[in-house]
Image (tube, rainbow, N blue to C red; front, side):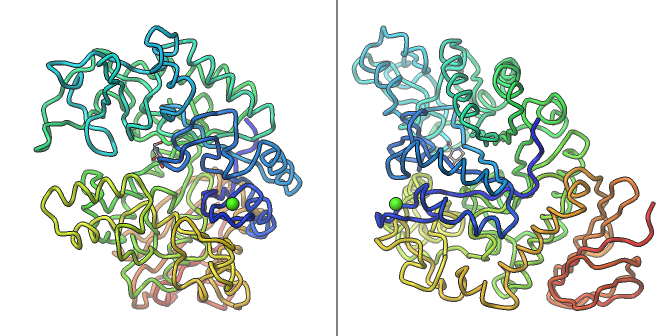
Length: 553
Ligand code: NOJ
Ligand code: CA
């Protein structure tokens, strides 16, 4: 495999930078900000989907894998982006959505137009039962996972929105077409892929109804489609015939992979280079339910992160992250409002950034952009949020209560425009942005943070430079051992590679904490001026430090 990425930056193209004033970010916008990313010591850029799409789910509904969506630009722009990134030693990861396509994809249109067409079997059509769908599975975005084809009376399966019909991976011709398409992008020179919802590609083939789990009579169908037995054959085929020959880096969104099974998914001969673990980013949710978010204590988060690291380190290389386009902003999730300061946000950064694996930064995280202060459901775009709001109303919530329920966890919190400068629309666009601009953009924008001596952006630059420097290998692959676990609010760990040892300590509380620290040289600290640590040390509230320990092993 190519070198593992050290620092990956996720770009959500629609919200990153608009260069033609239509209010929608574009590939030329990404090109125009490559130097910003270079200054942040990014070596790899993950682009959320840029392919042709009716944008029901913002590009996660692809209507043509071989074309760039006109909002984002052209294939020439993509080629230019790949080349310009390469000049700066950056690789590009494209987002592969292989579980489903858009219902506007030619394959699906043909499947609907002519039930006898070979494309019908590229999707999952089944006869209904008793005038209703084939079974009672609920889609991830609510309602039945089946949609009726009015012409034949059959139903097609969609585990996400009805405009996202699931592909039938049992069909070898369909798989061949997908694999050829992926090879095409590798030939173009992308360094790899983030792979969407891949644990859902294998479905239980007898499609049984399940005991209903809610008053709607439907059931969560995950047990019949998440990492369902038989998926192994599809994943190995894709690894061996597509990824391996090109040495591609792959990071999978693979919900439902148990820790015991990680060695099969990542590592030397894993299906992927890395997988995202949701356990600590969804830790605020009970049973994964979007409306159950609660404040998480540092100790609880620490246990979850360390359990994850233990499993990942034993299996291969991780992909550590705080935010992505499906999450709300990390300062709102993990910090109490009064603690959501530059120091608090920098501490959150240190907490995850030096864990084992590639470190991912989501756009705007380095500026500490918080959730948007939503005032009306009409301000949202996200298909999932709007569905959740409707479900809230039908469960009897008032409009206000339903809005409150969805606002905190809405995916649109991560999708508001990037904040570049102090001009109107924060320099994101000269037109009307597709989502509202955060009202605090004057103080949060990159221009302002760049001008300050102390800012979160400057701190992220230092963190990232440290990740890229002489200890890069230790951060990527070294072992991890928890430290100071007897303290409720200390999040600390030691990393080690051969004789090198690095200690990371975060004081996650609004009061100081004295610790007896081993002797060492400070590589990074969000609050302290000194260069050395050792002995009884009073850590300031929300202080976070990274130190090279003197005593080598
Ligand atoms: C996961 C993606 O991250 C999310 O944004 C999308 O809605 C679903 N997969 C469906 O593709
Ligand atoms: Ca644009």
